[in-house]
Structures are given as C-alpha cells and as structure tokens.
Image 1 (cartoon, helix red, strand yellow):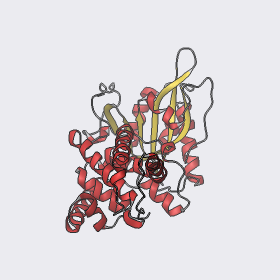
Image 2: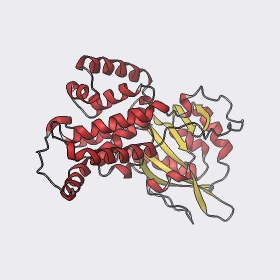
Image 3: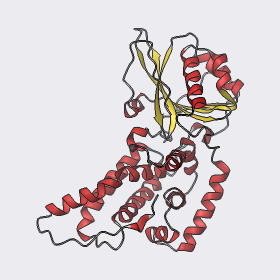
Image 4: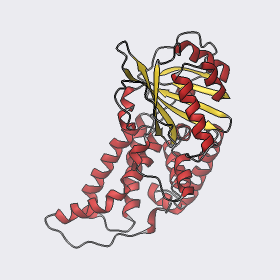
Length: 348
C-alpha cells in the first residue's frame, strides 16, 4: 500500500460561492473513506466509535478545505485529522478488551456464567461488508485480512494511543518514518523508538496468525462446515474433534471464558442439549470466518443469539468469540430471523 505523500493536490482557483469547493472536496475525499474507517477501527476497537470519528474527520476536513494549500496530499491531511480525533477519543477510554483480557479462564464450565458486564467498553467486531471489496493483489488480500483480525486489533488495545498510530501507519499502511513524524508533530527518532516499543509489546501478546490463509482453501471450508453442522446437531463430540487442543471460547459481555478443548467441550455440553436448537448462517467479520447463530424460540422461529467469530489454524478452531449482541447481525448482512432449518455455506 502506498505511503502518505505520494500525490499532491494542485492549488484551486477562487470559488466565491463555495459550491465548487464542496463538490471538489467530496470527489477527492470519498476514495479515502473506507481505508480511514479501517484505520479508525484499528485505533479504537469499535466500529461505532470509528464511524463517529470518521464523520467528525470529514466534517473538520470540509470546514478546513478552503484553507488547504496542498503542501501534503489530501490523504495525508485527512489521516492527520483522523489521528488527532482518535487520540482525543482514546483519552477517556484507552482500551477495549475481550473477556480474556480481564482475567484468567474459568476452570468449572458446569457453573453458570457470571453476570454480564454491559458497562465494560468491549472490543467490537468489524463486519467485512463495511470495508468494500478486497484488493486485487492476493498478497494485499492476505495482509489486509491479517491486520484486521480480531486478535490483532485486541492486541493493539494494549498499546498507548500514539504507539498504536505509529505501528498502524508504519507496519500496516507502510508510511515512511518521516511522514509519520510530520503527521504526529514529532521527530523521526521518536517515531522509530515508539515503533520499536510497540513491536516488542505486540510480539508478546499477539496471537498466532490464522494458519489457513486462503478463503477458498478446501480444508478450511470443510472445517467450517463440520463446525456448523456439529453445532446445529448439538453434537459436542463432533465439535471437540474440530477444536484445537488449546481452543478458547469467549462470550462478551459475559466475562467468563474457557480455555482448552476439554473445558470448552464441557461448557458447550451444558448449552447444546438437542439437535435443532440452533441454526448457523455464515458471514465474514474482521477478515475471518464467522457465523450468526440463531436460537429457536417457543414458536419455532430462530432469533439472533450470538455472532461467532472464529480463528482457525492447521490444528483446528483455535478461538471462538461469541458476541451476544443481536444488533451485530444486520451490519453483517444476516437476516433478522429464520423460519426453518436453513444454513448458509461457510464464509471465507
């Protein structure tokens, strides 16, 4: 991906009524909207917060566009505005955790899960539908997926705000150190130092990357199909066959989480009691396979229960984060309810 100052915006003639300014700004800035949204999401760990900051970024940029002199590219200028807005947003709340970031796993899955903690600003998933089509370059596709992974964004939450910005701009967006220094109003040496510290901390806490990197990999698709079928059939032994030895199960906003295939299997056995209790519809979130799980109510209609985001490796399903939030279904393109035993094909 190209760095910040690769293009310049030519000076514009005077426009007394401002109409040309508005039209020009909209035409030139719109191509950056999706990448700026992804940048703000990585910074903030929340799609809602990222959309709010993006709206504020475009409003500030529109108001200041008349004074924009083109000394940097429009893209760089807008990243500068977005970065300031993100850092300001992080002043009040710097980290959005997953349950595994708040304490150790439970060793007794037979006990009821602890009460929800709705007041905690949890890490939120990012539906792939929000970020448009994937790049044409296969290498860029893999890189984009890896840097949007739920685990990567969760790891970013442990970094101070400026270190997050430096790492994303340098390692994800491939900006030069001098460009980042100019954007942050600091020195190249300070940027390099911050990047070194951020990389070191991230290396200690970031999970293993998805070992099945190609969405259409037959082994990956078969694994997802086995997982969904076993879940729908309440077949806990079959589920345990697709789980990795060190599998993790999390359920924000419930702080209880489980680690290890046997423990996760015992927990699922307390929840999956009969075939047909759930239906699974495939989607894609954070560049990862995901399922909307629908629970059958007393009328036989399947209602949204949890958005399950899966992390895979060659060993099997390494992690399932089941977000217990029905409001996540619509942004992922999932239907509001299901009337029968329908399941979509696994997503890549």
